[in-house]
Image (cartoon, rainbow, N blue to C red; front, side, top):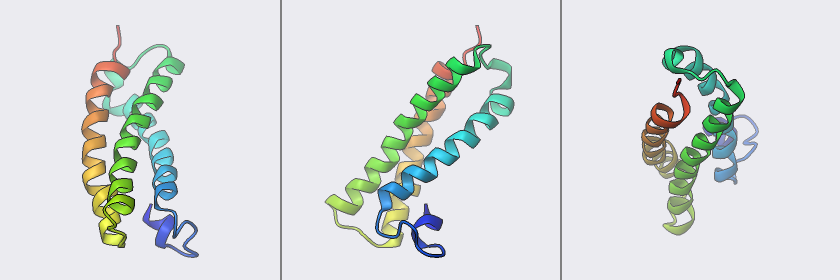
Length: 113
Protein backbone atom coordinates (compact mmCIF):
# COMPACT_ATOMS: atom_id res chain seq x y z
CA UNK A 1 0.00 0.00 0.00
CA UNK A 2 2.72 2.45 0.97
CA UNK A 3 4.76 1.72 -2.15
CA UNK A 4 1.76 2.46 -4.35
CA UNK A 5 0.92 5.65 -2.46
CA UNK A 6 4.28 7.11 -1.51
CA UNK A 7 6.83 5.20 -3.60
CA UNK A 8 8.44 6.29 -6.86
CA UNK A 9 5.92 8.22 -8.93
CA UNK A 10 3.25 8.02 -6.21
CA UNK A 11 1.15 5.92 -8.58
CA UNK A 12 -1.92 5.98 -6.31
CA UNK A 13 -0.94 8.86 -4.05
CA UNK A 14 -4.44 10.28 -3.82
CA UNK A 15 -6.29 6.94 -3.79
CA UNK A 16 -5.68 5.21 -0.45
CA UNK A 17 -8.54 2.73 -0.81
CA UNK A 18 -7.44 1.60 -4.29
CA UNK A 19 -3.86 1.18 -3.07
CA UNK A 20 -5.08 -0.93 -0.15
CA UNK A 21 -7.29 -3.13 -2.36
CA UNK A 22 -4.46 -3.80 -4.85
CA UNK A 23 -2.00 -4.61 -2.09
CA UNK A 24 -4.46 -7.03 -0.50
CA UNK A 25 -5.11 -8.82 -3.82
CA UNK A 26 -1.38 -9.53 -4.26
CA UNK A 27 -1.03 -10.57 -0.62
CA UNK A 28 -4.04 -12.88 -0.91
CA UNK A 29 -2.54 -14.92 -3.74
CA UNK A 30 0.76 -15.30 -1.91
CA UNK A 31 -1.10 -16.13 1.29
CA UNK A 32 -3.18 -18.89 -0.32
CA UNK A 33 -0.06 -20.66 -1.53
CA UNK A 34 1.61 -20.35 1.87
CA UNK A 35 -1.44 -21.50 3.79
CA UNK A 36 -2.27 -24.37 1.44
CA UNK A 37 1.22 -25.81 1.21
CA UNK A 38 2.61 -24.89 4.63
CA UNK A 39 0.38 -23.67 7.48
CA UNK A 40 -2.67 -25.85 6.76
CA UNK A 41 -0.97 -28.50 4.60
CA UNK A 42 -2.35 -31.36 6.70
CA UNK A 43 -5.94 -30.16 6.40
CA UNK A 44 -6.15 -28.81 2.87
CA UNK A 45 -9.05 -29.89 0.67
CA UNK A 46 -8.72 -32.23 -2.26
CA UNK A 47 -10.80 -29.86 -4.39
CA UNK A 48 -8.27 -27.07 -4.95
CA UNK A 49 -10.74 -24.91 -6.88
CA UNK A 50 -13.39 -25.00 -4.19
CA UNK A 51 -10.79 -24.26 -1.54
CA UNK A 52 -9.51 -21.29 -3.53
CA UNK A 53 -13.03 -19.89 -3.95
CA UNK A 54 -13.63 -20.08 -0.19
CA UNK A 55 -10.20 -18.59 0.44
CA UNK A 56 -10.95 -15.66 -1.88
CA UNK A 57 -14.35 -15.06 -0.25
CA UNK A 58 -12.85 -15.10 3.24
CA UNK A 59 -10.09 -12.74 2.14
CA UNK A 60 -12.64 -10.40 0.59
CA UNK A 61 -14.27 -10.20 4.02
CA UNK A 62 -10.91 -9.52 5.66
CA UNK A 63 -10.15 -6.89 3.07
CA UNK A 64 -13.48 -5.17 3.72
CA UNK A 65 -12.53 -4.89 7.39
CA UNK A 66 -9.18 -3.26 6.54
CA UNK A 67 -10.55 -1.02 3.80
CA UNK A 68 -13.53 -0.12 5.99
CA UNK A 69 -11.34 1.05 8.87
CA UNK A 70 -9.21 3.05 6.42
CA UNK A 71 -12.30 4.57 4.80
CA UNK A 72 -13.81 5.60 8.12
CA UNK A 73 -10.53 7.04 9.36
CA UNK A 74 -9.66 8.86 6.12
CA UNK A 75 -13.03 10.06 4.85
CA UNK A 76 -15.33 10.15 7.88
CA UNK A 77 -12.99 11.16 10.68
CA UNK A 78 -10.71 13.23 8.42
CA UNK A 79 -7.43 11.65 9.50
CA UNK A 80 -5.59 11.95 6.17
CA UNK A 81 -1.92 11.85 7.11
CA UNK A 82 0.23 8.90 6.01
CA UNK A 83 0.62 7.86 9.65
CA UNK A 84 -3.14 7.90 10.25
CA UNK A 85 -3.78 5.89 7.07
CA UNK A 86 -1.20 3.31 8.13
CA UNK A 87 -2.60 3.01 11.65
CA UNK A 88 -6.13 2.55 10.28
CA UNK A 89 -5.32 0.15 7.43
CA UNK A 90 -2.20 -1.66 8.61
CA UNK A 91 -2.83 -1.47 12.34
CA UNK A 92 -6.48 -1.71 13.29
CA UNK A 93 -7.74 -3.08 9.96
CA UNK A 94 -4.96 -5.64 9.64
CA UNK A 95 -5.52 -6.98 13.15
CA UNK A 96 -9.29 -7.30 12.65
CA UNK A 97 -8.82 -8.85 9.20
CA UNK A 98 -6.20 -11.32 10.44
CA UNK A 99 -8.41 -12.54 13.29
CA UNK A 100 -11.35 -12.95 10.92
CA UNK A 101 -9.25 -14.77 8.31
CA UNK A 102 -7.62 -17.17 10.75
CA UNK A 103 -10.96 -18.21 12.25
CA UNK A 104 -12.44 -18.75 8.78
CA UNK A 105 -9.37 -20.58 7.44
CA UNK A 106 -9.52 -23.00 10.32
CA UNK A 107 -13.28 -23.60 10.28
CA UNK A 108 -14.35 -22.97 6.67
CA UNK A 109 -11.51 -23.09 4.14
CA UNK A 110 -8.98 -25.71 5.16
CA UNK A 111 -11.30 -28.43 6.39
CA UNK A 112 -10.16 -31.77 4.99
CA UNK A 113 -12.81 -34.40 5.43
